[in-house]
Image 1 (tube, rainbow, N blue to C red):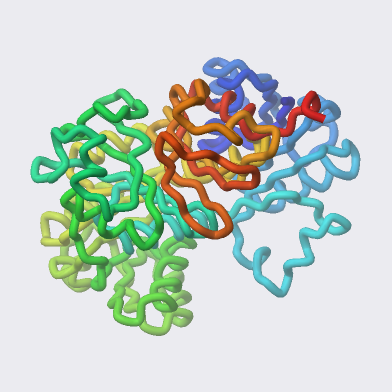
Image 2 (cartoon, rainbow, N blue to C red):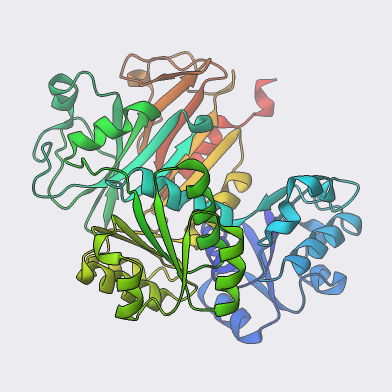
Length: 458
């Protein structure tokens, strides 16, 4: 596949890294010569210095042969114009754009992105995606990662196994016998720096990060099985009143009438603006690194402190200070990939990575086959995927135990006619089933083959 990416920032670099690693033909455009040099030195991609919305720059990047244009610069208008130029002048089949300003996405302006207006096939709104991830973390405080598939019917949860975890040192095949009423499937384990698909004889060890797939209404019970009975937060402090912090506060007001939310924002002007918009949230103007402001926000009595500023260092330090003051749980927004392991070592309970979330959204539309959803996890070592099985798929019609196709893969759930099914060895996938699975990075191409339409079958 030939892909042109506009923007070589953290998101653009992350997308280029994944696609180039999968042997796609990738060109990346940026106005910064330094960024282009850095990307081309580290990745097998073609770099072009220039404005991604200019026709001549797109032409130098090979847009005429491109199957896809991905516009993820920091400027919405550049991203939109790049897609317009790609459509009008070069007839690019698929165009994705990152749009951050929520006014463009308001329901009353939905016709803006119609094919005869601004022809953007996929709009990525990182603020909304990250905000929703934060809200899911708040609803499942025992989870270190969450993602939902199949219109919310299936939830995948990452959970850390601590010393008091009841299932530690128990072979997986015994869990079904010991807990027959728990409807969940363990699909991946991260142990140290190694990620693997567990087999029935494998055991969970203390310190493992385990990912399980469950029907939505069984998630809380499954978390209890892993020793996590935390109650969803009601007293919440948010540091950062930018687009993400404001979105989270707004949605908490809509979804949780019992929540008591306080928001700390450093900018006086921004504080006044969002205070006028929010109804029940208490907005404080101040520095989240100042003890006096944290005390005024009641961090010592908070169930959860969420740091959502644009500065990773402020997010880490404010969370650690909140923990010291007495906050029961802390969650940080971390843009830099390298900070994640560092933050866990410092005791930060959970973090959200906007780049990973945005890259996952892009991969959903890059993947070939009937792929409905993708979530990259564990530093790109694997992906959670939702896909539709076609009549021609090798998965269809045979018991799973008879298929020699699933090495490095683990099917966690199948949704059939709205019903969530947890497959065992004798399970038979049918055409049009929605399959939720985990795949190691080196098996992604195999997944695409399993779920794509092949001409030789017709």
